[in-house]
Structures are given as structure tokens and as C-alpha cells.
Length: 561
Length: 70
Image (cartoon, rainbow over all chains, first blue to last red; front, side):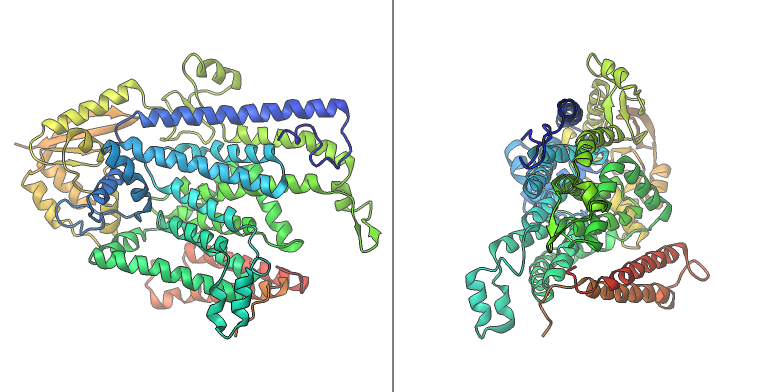
């Protein structure tokens, strides 16, 4: 595994000078330590969230409620215009994967956080494995996998009760399964025999199991989160380049399966599945927001992005497009959807995963270049290829590669800044708190990342206690308090707002309940409700208290006398 | 029946040029079918047209690469 560090990867290259070998070793150890350090911060953050029983990111509690509904055999895709004014806008697979934990341990937020965190580790392991498989370099694979986990975006959302990381896991697994698949070389004998028979077109459906496994993983990704469509299209586009007719057949079968599931759920939910999953997700689009996210991603992942674009350009013009490059191109383009109202940095996590694989491939290929004879003549010694294959380049590259990993790690650096370990470490690294909560992130101020403090735990319990003691149902913008208080979950703020903006949500009945003061307590955080609902709350409820939790001010209101 | 041979760089280039043109035409025709808040082309349409132009240029740049596999 450490062959890379010794500067003699394949046993074919001339040994480097002693000083270069030792310098390379030292730099690789430093790069590995830096990435392992970031990984430990990630684990620490994840454990902190596992222990926090309330919403850390808005919407987590509603995802938990989706899981609870599934465990009760109830679809969460409902008419949100009637009590309890609730619907879910995400597909069910992540919730179904979490359901066994909820059935075993009860409705707790750590369940989904553990599933999501595990998904991020599986995705990183798949990246590492892919790089190792393609380059033969285990250490390179590990560094690329750790680079994925060190990304600010992976770090921030990895341990949340959100379905995004599970989607990325399925996407990455699908790509790794399919990347070395060749339509023209991997047909089974049976398939060839069948195709040559008179069954004609549909005989081509006899593809090797690996293709169907990849297709199944893609469908899983899509039924975890709709955003996976870009990866599905990337795979189909790549298959199309390799064998258009059979790619269309694969696409047809996948559409048939995915479409059948879609229609079945839509039938079972009286059409609310389509309204919630598709229509409610068509939001206003802001170009400045999209450009800001692109810029931030490129700045934070500059080394990975340069390597990924380098491989993409090389394969486009000089080589043959790999699935990894095609995936990166589609995932990067899909980042444009981050301009949607309510979208965020998570829309670039798939691009980060693809870039990590391509960075490993770029490093492995550059190292693997060696002077070659082609068609009876050697490469021109003045050519770029000859330079890249030269011992001089190898020497520079062996030293530069760990430095590039170190630069990338510094670009995405995030760490806590207080405490007996983090305090001195932050001073050593020359970073200071950028969140006001003892946390530094190279992307600047960020809501996600700081660990919940004891005061945040106490604040959450105080809010839950007020909710528990309130008469009747509680109107809460976060569902985590409701689970702690033993109250029913009522409303799902953000989907209501989006559906209201799209003309899909009539708040009349909700406003009537508010006007009758049927809610014993109102808990607001970001106030992501339709304006008429907020106006009704303002008219019929008065401030009770304000409580700070995780950097947010929770406004609690009680019925006006 | 559609060929099942792998695509060449030239074929990929042609597909990208055709796709870029169709996409650009669609972007231009959006206003015909849907009311727009902007007189003329809106910022999102201009951005989309820019992307279409890049796709077409990418496709054109692949045409000289001939029969090498894409």
C-alpha cells in the first residue's frame, strides 16, 4: 500500500534518489495525517449530532416523521391542505432504510444520522476502491476517499438526517460497478448465443448481472433523491457512446421499472406523490445563487477540480471518455440546480465524489506513463509525453503529489477552535473561530459544522418542555421537539411555502385553525411558511419567549387572550 | 435498426452540435409558449444560450478527430 510513498509504484520505474524518497515519504505522511485529522473531526462532529436529540438542520425532524409514517404503513405523500397539513417532498428509500432502526429503537434523530453518516463512509470507501482498482495504488485511493470526506460539503451534511448522502452512496456504488463494464466485451456466452438467435431486438436484454446491478443501484439512488437523475443520465449517455442500441434498451427497461414504481405509489397516494415529489420541487431559480455556489465549490476544491477537468479534457480529445469523466461532467452541470430556491451546497457533493475519483486517476496515469515504442518508433524525446514519462518529471511529481493533497486539504480545512485539543491545534494552524460557536470553516460562516453545546441541549429540552405542557397540538417549524414532547407532528414548513408559491397549497383550513387558536403553542425558527399563514399567526398569537439554540433564535408564541 | 457500434468522436461532435442547436432553439421559443417577466431575452435565457453555444463549439471541435472512439 505504501509503494507510492517510496516512489516506486509499479516496480518498473528507476528508484529515486535517497533524499527524494525520504522527502516524498515525509510529505505523504503529512498529507495522510492532515486527511486523517479531518476525518477525526468529521467523526467527532457526527457523534455530537448522534447525541443531539433535536433538529440540527431544519427539516431533519420531518424526515424522521416520514420514517415513522412508513413504519405505520402510511405514505407521507398527502394532501397538506387538511389537518395535519403534512406532506413529504422526498422519495421513500432513505426513509425505508432507516425504518428498521426506528422500529428497533423508537423515533430518534440519531437513527437517520447514522444511516447518512454510514452512507458517506461507504461512498468514500467506494471512491478509494475505484482509484485503487484503476491505478493499483492503495494509498492514492485512501487519500482520494479521505479527500471526499474532507470536503466542507460532505462534512457539513454527512451526519444529518437527510437523504442526500445516501443518494451519493448509491450513485458512487453504481458508477464503481459499471465503470469497467464494456458492452462489447462482457456479454456472456449465453447472451451472445441468444442474440444470434431469432429473438431479435429484445434478446439484447440478456446483459451480464453487473449491468443490472448498476442499473438497480441507479434506481435506488433516484428513489432516494430526485437529484440522482443526472447520474442516471450520465450512465446512459456513456453506455450510448459504447453501444447505442443496447444503451437505449437498458434505458427503456430502467424507465419501465422506475416508471412502474412511480405510477404505483401515485395510485396508492391518490396522486399526492406526483404533486409532492415533482410539482412541489419546481421552484424559482436564481442565477446569482447558482453562480455563487459554483464559485465556492471551485475555490474550495480547486486541486480536485483541476485534476478532474484535466482528465475530462484529455479523454474528450485524446483518449476515450470513461464513465468517471462522463459522471463528473453531468454532476458538475447538475450543480446548476443549486440556483433553485431552497437548494444548497449539497448539490455539489456528487461532483465532489466524481472529482475525487478523477483526481486519483490523473495521479495514477501521470505516474504510470513510461517511454514507449509506438509503431516501431520511440516517442519524440521533446514531446510532452516523453517529458511526463521522464525521470525528472517523476521526481518532481513524487514530491508534488502529496503537496497537492496538502493544498487541497488546506482549501477545505474545517476544525473546532476551542478545547484542550482543538484550541492549540487551531492556533498551530493559524485559524480562528469563523462561526461564533468555536468552529472554523474555510468557506467562512456556515450554519452547519459547529457541535451542539450543552446550552443547545438545554435549550432544546426547554422548548420541548414548553411544547409538552401546551394544550392541544403544537404548531412547530421543527418536528424534533414534537417527538421529544410526545405531540403529533403538524405542518411541514418548507414544502408548504414552496407549494404555496407554486399555487399548490391553499392555507385556508390551516389559517382557520390558527384563528380559532387551536394550537397551544407556536414554535418558529426561519419562518419558512406562506405569508398568509405567518400573518394569521401574528394576528392570533403573541410572543411567549425567545430561546437560542444552535445559533438560531426560536420564537415561541402563545394564543392571544 | 439503430447501429450498436461504439460512437466515434466525429459522431459525438455531430450529436453535440445538433443537441446544442435544438436546445438553443427551444430556449428562444420559450417566450412563444410562456409569458416572461422580461421584454426580449431574460438573464436565464441568455445564460442557457451561452451554454448551448459552448456545447456547439465543443461539438465542432470534435469533428476533426474523425473515427477515433469517443
